[in-house]
Structures are given as C-alpha cells and as structure tokens.
Length: 414
Image 1 (spheres, rainbow, N blue to C red):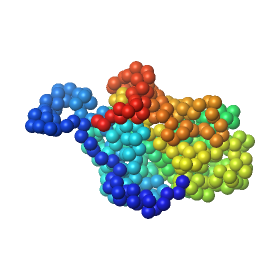
Image 2 (cartoon, rainbow, N blue to C red):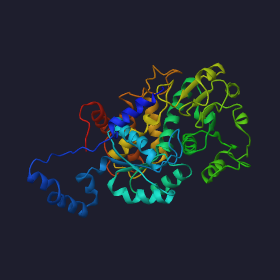
Image 3 (cartoon, helix red, strand yellow):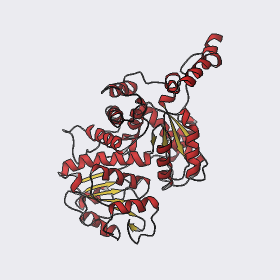
C-alpha cells in the first residue's frame, strides 16, 4: 500500500499528536477537587504506603505501558534520533490503545547507550504496569531487555523481538499444516540477524526447530564471520555446531523455510528453486520484500507471506503486541518468557478458521475481532501457569473482558 506524502503530513499536522490524555473523573465543585487531588489523594497515597499492591487499586498503573525508544533502529529509517522517532512512537501508542485498550505513553529519550535506557526504564517503572522497548538497535536491544527483565518486577516487552517472533511462529504453524511438515523436521534459513532475526531464531528453537541457518551481512553466522556481535556469536554456538560457512547461495540449498528480515531484493528466484518442495517463503522486509510473490511463486514457493499491511498474507506485529500487553497487564504479570510467547503464537494461528486455512490465508485478518482477545487470554493463562501472575484470573475472563473493551462499547478510559 503506497501512502501519499502530503496526505500523511496533513494527518499529522491536523492531529498534532495521535494520542491524548483524558480525565476519568469530573471536577465540578470544591468537594470534587478536594477528593480528586490533595486531600483525597493523601488517603490513596497512605494506603499504597501501607500496601504497595494497592497501587493497582487506586491508580491507573495497571493499564499503563511505557513505550521507550532511543530512535536508533526505526523501521525502514534506521538511526534517526529520538525527536524524529516521536511520530512513529505516537502511532505505536495509538495502536496499543485501539487494538488492545492499553494506555501506552511514548518516551523518546536521548540515550547514549544501553545503560541510559536501562536507567530511564528503572526510574520510570513505578508509574507503569509494563514496559515496551521499541526501535533500539541491536545488540543494545537485547542488553536492555534482558537486564530489565532481570531487575524489574513488571513485564518488559520488545515488539521488535517478541512481536516479530510470535507472528513468524504463528504463520509458520499454519503454513506447515498446509505443506504437511513438522517443526522438528524442517530446515529454516533466516536472513537478517538483528533484533527480530535473533528473537525469531530463539523462539523457533524453543518450539522445536532443530536445523537453522542465520545470516548477517557477512554470511552464515559461524566460524570466519567477522561481523558478529556478542548476541550473534552466542546464537552461532547454538545452531552451527558443525561450523558451516558461506553465503545465502549456500544456505538456501535444501531449505524448507525462508524468513526474510533484511531488505529488498536479497533473494532471487534461483534461491527459491534450491529449496525443498513445499517451500515456505516469509519475505518480511519492509517496505519492500526480499522477493516478490510472483517471482517466488513462479520459482516453486508453496506458501508466501509479506510483512507489510495490505499485502498477501500480511504479517505485521500488530497481530501480537496489543494482545500480549493486554494479557500481561490483566493478570499483573511479573515477567515474560518463551512459553508465554508460544501461547500467543498458538492463539494467533488458531484465529484462522481451519475451514478457511489456505496458502493465501495463513494469518488472521488484521481487523478480526478474535485476535487480540484470543492472544490476551492465552498470554494471561500462560503467565498463570508459569507462576508469573500476581492476579490469577479464571479461564475465559480475560477473553471476555478484552472483547467487551474493544467491541462491546465499553472501552476503558482509565
């Protein structure tokens, strides 16, 4: 989908920001003012002093998410800085609200490195029920997320990592069903070893994929690759114990699945022809895929998907992150792990009616009213099973409440 530049600028100029803060109580007289502000606020503050968990009863923390970015890896633009990243982060916050009824606040910061981002997140944490690290370049992205997950008692999400991994696994589950292959028997090639590529590899390994090749700009991750950072080196020791080397030309021989997280034109029809019968091509580079649908199909791809909305089998992370955040917040999760992410993937895959599952339909419709409620429910129940929920809820409650929030006419404004 091509968007006109002037139309986009006019929308942003007219909106002057894509999110606002609205009051949840009215102040009509002096008593209202007293109850809502200092005098009344004192009682709430004292209650929280006595029992810190009461913060979720007397404030909006339980439905508030900090979206923190340093603007170093903004999708399609790279390192554009905190100020230029703000309209993109505002847009992301809008999607959290519209698709998950999550109050996300953009915090674009002039950080000098991972430690600054970590410090900022830790200082701001008491105000938020969850944190999303957004568009931070790799490997800092991994350093920040992993440190914060260890040091905070609220869930720390990174959509670039977790959202990408969840959506890829969900699409792959359905695609493999169509070509009658199993996760444990396939060979996967991932082109792109940034935050998304490494996170996808980690979740696929956890899901049972045993044969995987990842490439960065210097080729296959492994011995002799002089471009690896510490995250890539760690991954290479897990997936390339035999010391394979080479380029994309070598990696595509006999592959069952290609996951593209790189840039336009990185693979050719010849590469697809080298894959096994029933090849699955997930060309997720944006705004242009690594190879077009026509080229891949003519070369023998059985299933093809892209990352951009409005395209065939569109796989945007929007399928994942609103529901993940909603589920984690609703049970007051203290963390996030790969079992929870797998539950989200299964929920997205399951949102495609099995009677409608075809090679042109492996992911649900972007505006389906089932996706976020299903993901939120699955995430909430997984967090409970993993012992990470401070507020366990019975099965189906999160699903029903999420559906009502979004589609029942009672979207929460807290």
